[in-house]
Amino acid sequence: MKATEGQIGRVLVIRLEDGDVVPDCIERFAEEKGITAGQVILIGGIGGGEVVVGPRRSDEMPPEPMLLPLDGAHEVAGVGVLAPGEDGKMALHIHAALGRSGKTTTGCLRPGVTTWLVGEAVIFEILGVDAKRILSEETGFALLEVVPK
Image 1: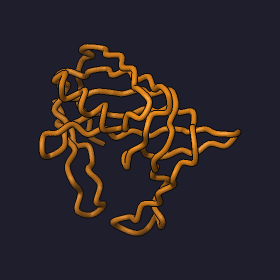
Image 2 (image 1 turned 180 degrees about the vertical axis):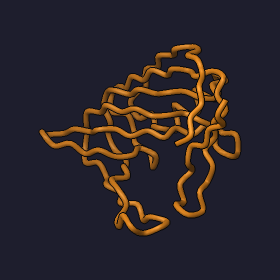
Image 3 (image 1 turned 90 degrees about the vertical axis):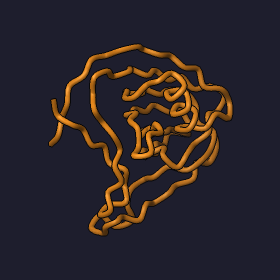
Image 4 (image 1 turned 30 degrees about the horizontal axis):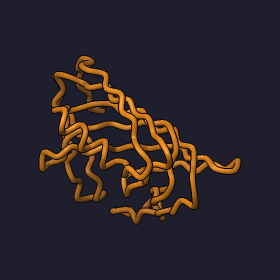
């Protein structure tokens, strides 16, 4: 395990509009506001897109992602971590539970989903941490790396 310690900075509340693409719009907003690390909580509606619902085979590296398209509006509750990638651009790793008609799909929103009608997000800015997403050759994932204090 690797860990670092920071402090809560600003708390920003965002209303996502119908058709906004998650995680893109949250990453753009974070860059505009100069956020270098943060936690994101998301609730609202998702209208379409794809989510990663696991690797096809758990023992295969790099794993082949299983993508599941969403068929219509879903309720969403998600949580994620914002940190810059190696290129310095903000990257949001967010997992969410998406419900429709009594069924729930849980997965990573990284491939992109669109807001249905409205989404609400809260960003808790984290100050004083040295964290980046570094591409792992073994997994193919941009993994969070932190520098301990």
